[in-house]
Image 1: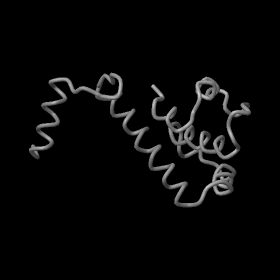
Image 2: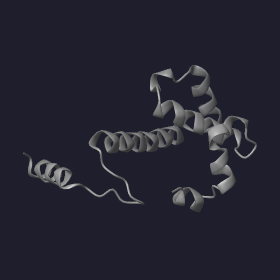
Image 3: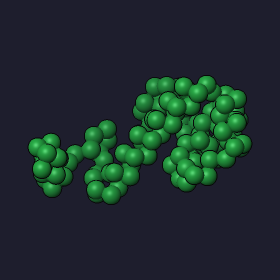
Length: 111
């Protein structure tokens, strides 16, 4: 887990500090704002405050904010889909059960 984050420079110490990122010196102000944005996107996205929006714009351009948002939407959506369908994620793959494979085949066939 976190393999791609490690490749991008996230250390084990940073991973351990994530639950308390707000109080950690390991994250830059820009990273803290992005992490807060991720929390809001994963939880109650309607709670995005004007203050957080302003902080995002202090550190990121509009295209960067959109890129962050799209990535978050994909991961949050994927996580929710995995949960509601009961898929089991193993390592970097998510094998389909026979039932899910049948549903996928039907969807591909337009049934």
